[in-house]
Amino acid sequence: MNFPADLKYTKDHEWIRVEGDLATVGITEFAQRELGDIVYIDINSVGKVVNADDVFGTVEAVKTVSDLFMPVTGKVLEINPLLDSRPELVNSDPYGDGWMVKVQITGDVEQLLTADSYKVLVGA
Image 1 (cartoon, rainbow, N blue to C red):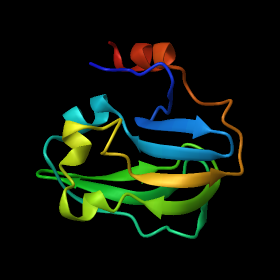
Image 2: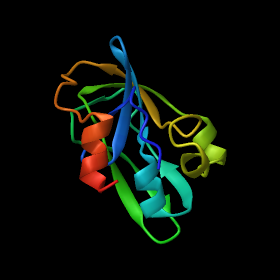
Image 3: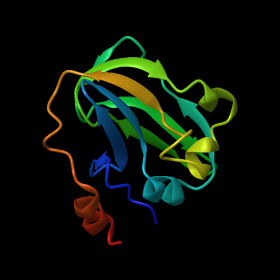
């Protein structure tokens, strides 16, 4: 399983790539494997400030629906437009084309897990 060291992680299995005060957010390879085949992404939080640990959308797989939790407080600037027609990108490329939102960070990123800490959390 892949755990890119340049990312930060949450206990709820989201990843975040921080670039200054902007960040890209998605779900981890572990999360997409647990969910199975993803068929729909529902995110309607563009333009909204979402607090850390609050729900910013849902991901629907063949057998379940799961909430998406914001890793840090920030304003949602963009939703990945590819996911409307190709939600399976979250399965095939969770750290690349399968990203979910871009946010302007207004909160602290220090509470997030490193790749090594996340590996321990998921037992990898």
